[in-house]
Image 1: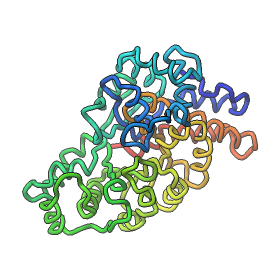
Image 2: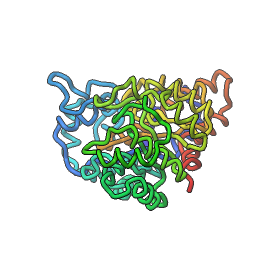
Image 3: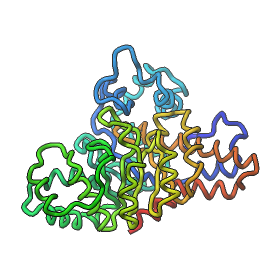
Image 4: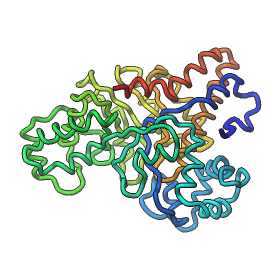
Length: 375
């Protein structure tokens, strides 16, 4: 296992460091890794969560928080020294077949269970079972609601057809996910629509789903079936209007469906709002995945703020790694390191015992997800 606490001196107490190093994670929201080799331009674009195209000329993603983290933590697994140059890293990476690269990096993430969203670029990345074969552990599937609606929109009797298909899938998946933040924003009418309106909207639908009525219908249907509902909030690419991805916009849904289990994904820069919702509403949990990776060494501050208010039983670990196995690894390394530094400081001040700190990281890293996603 990578020494995630290298360079931290005695900032992380020994028992806490040992607990975090040995902790087998549940990555509760993740994607597959690329099947085919990439060009350098494709690699650097995939490091940048915000881009939907090539990184502009004159900019290198190796000179960014996530790029520095790649050079620091991934380079040694490619037989390079820490902080190897971007050119050297790219040369060593290019010499490895995609499967070999993935095995080296994913195994070091220390994940026992991968909960995989297969709704994006599924042909380009590995399946849940393939991801588990490369990284170890087991895998489960998350169904993306917008993709399911798009595939069934023109079926006769759409509302019943959708309910029947989701009921058929429910025993084989662990959760449903909505990307309403991308398609409509979260500032929509979250009340349950009538079947007649849903059927009319489905009949008129073409192409990419951006109908708030159909999205609300799909979310309510998933909740009706007892599926945990993952909701993308906060950080995303340039297709997303960030101000419309604030999880506070879900208040009407949370108030109207107290039976829902809602998992707020990513959350930054709204992670404090997410913490409030997890503290205020039964059934709400959240993570700070993706942002931990993108912030690199700055993730210490993010993890500190994520621990401010919400009960620790409401927080989950996620990498949201997509495509590049570097991202799956960095989610793990940076979260472990940040949690150790933040809670280690609290231990030294006497604000928490070392035993409690070890218990908190076990809850966030694995135990909470095992409870939330239990069948």
